[in-house]
Structure formats: C-alpha cells, structure tokens
Amino acid sequence: MYSVPQILTRATPQDYALNYKEKSIFKPFQEVGFKTYCLVCKNLLTYEKYLTDGMDSLICVEGDKDIPRLIDSLSTIYPKTFFIVQFLGNHSFYYNYEPAFDVYKPNINDNPDNKSDSLYLNAYDNTILYADYILSSIITAINNKICSSAFLFVSDHGENISESGGGHGGDCQPEKTEYHVPLIVWYSNSYAKTFPNKVNNVNKYTQRAVNADNVFYSVCDMADITIASQYAKPEWSIFGDSLQDHTRYILVPDGINYIKVE
Image (cartoon, rainbow, N blue to C red; front, top):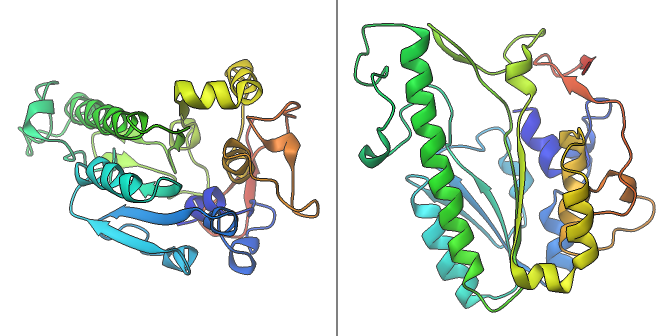
C-alpha cells in the first residue's frame, strides 16, 4: 500500500504526500494521446484506486491469465496504448498458478498440514514459473503489432519465505529479501530501431542499483515523453544518457519513517 504509489507517481519515502497531490504516471500518457488502461487482478489496488482516477478504463480480471488476452485485443483496437498492470503474481500464500505449472514438488498446496520452508519455496517457485509465462504472453501480444513496443516490470515487494509462509515488509525492520526486487525491461526490435540510444543506455545500466522512485521518470522516458522541467529528473531515468546514483530509502509500514538501503 506504500510501494505502489511510489512506483506510479513521483512520490518518494522522503515526500510520500506527493502521491496525493499529483496525478499518477498515466496522466503524461493521456496528454500525448495514448489510450490508458489499468488492468488489475481481482481486488488488488484496494488502497490505491485513487491513482487511476481519470484513466480511460479500469478493468478487473479474475486471474492473471486474462491479462495478456486483454492487452492483445485492446492494443489492436487502439494502437497507441499505455497499460498499467497489477498481477496477483507471487503473492503469498503461493497458490497462483495453473495445474500445468505445478512443477516443483512437494509443495505446501499438496501438503497444507506439513509446514516447512521447502514446501513454501517449491510453491513459490511454481508461481515464479507461472509469472514468467504471463510476462512472455504479454511480450507475444505486444510484439505482434506493427509498432514500437516496450514494457517495464517491477515487484512492489519481495518475499521473506519461512515455515509460516511469506512476509513482505510488514515490519519496520524489513529483511533484504522483502525489498530487494527485480526490475525487468523488454523492448521490440522496432523499438530498438526507433530509440537506439535509449536501448544502449538501458543495457549499459543493467548492474546499477535503482529504486521505486526511478520508475516514474524511466517509464516516461521509455515512451519518449518529455516532462516539464520543474518536475523532470532525467538523471533518474534508466533510459537516459546520465543515470545518477542516489541514496535509496524505504518507507516503512508506519508510513512516516524511512530507512536507508545499505
């Protein structure tokens, strides 16, 4: 409930209130003519629905598997589209995968009364396998279009897996596994030809450490959207020419205090 607003807006742990004062990432896309959609699984975004106010459409789906199909069909109707997608993904407890992805066994879904780290880890790995499939299905959907396409994927939290299940930052002293998360970028061949400099930059920065507060500026830059100078931070874009390191902080669950990432 604190990380999603920092991903979708210019809010930071030091100035979290910005997420209430300013529009989220969809607004710049609307202003330059994109059709804007938010696709969410079931009742996610419970705390953050205000972030989608004014978006062309908020669509709730029953499962992650419905998301690629919607992206495929909507991007066919409206070729200039921007999607914000929130998966159920790898959230505890780890049941979010289809039977075909029940690969790692034994797991907690087969043995609900036998609590152990390994059983939770195997179920978690199944959800990772399934999430990879969903991401690859989205890539297939947007790669089939005769246009430039790209996406950025990031987790809103990690998981500290133990015999009691998963923890994800509900503590004011979180473990590294709860906040050290991946950021994945994909782009089409057409995108690479259109924006070779951006592609060179993002590949150059693969080993750099960034934070949720890099996402807003990176996504705008990914779409080649220029932000007014008083709001811009080109040095925080992973697609920019001069990505700068900055001290990274985590807003802890009290919503007030923040800690430095060592």
